[in-house]
Amino acid sequence: MTQEQKELVELAARVSPKDAPAAKRMLESLLVDPFWLSLRAAPCDDEPVTQDEHAAIEEARGSVRRGEPLIAQDEVLREFGM
Image 1 (cartoon, helix red, strand yellow):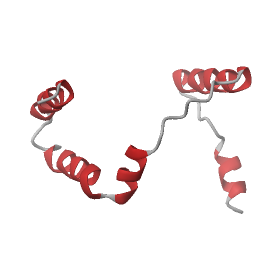
Image 2 (image 1 turned 45 degrees about the vertical axis):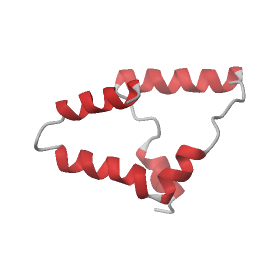
Image 3 (image 1 turned 90 degrees about the vertical axis):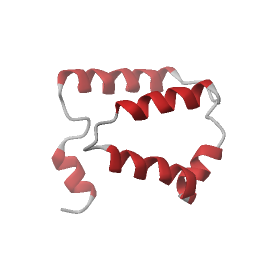
Image 4 (image 1 turned 30 degrees about the vertical axis):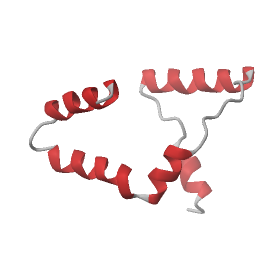
């Protein structure tokens, strides 16, 4: 058994009985869901992060820390024509 598998077993043991069915479904989806299989097989993004992207990431993290929405609700509604 690999180290990751051992850690997975340990994590599974910590899942509450109430959350066990959801955790089981999530794990099963990794085994049979074509989307997750293709996502798992996709190569990692190896492009370097630009300065602009890094600034945007830090801005978003700051918003999350402050409890602010990343996108205002009116912007989302406008995007969907509402």
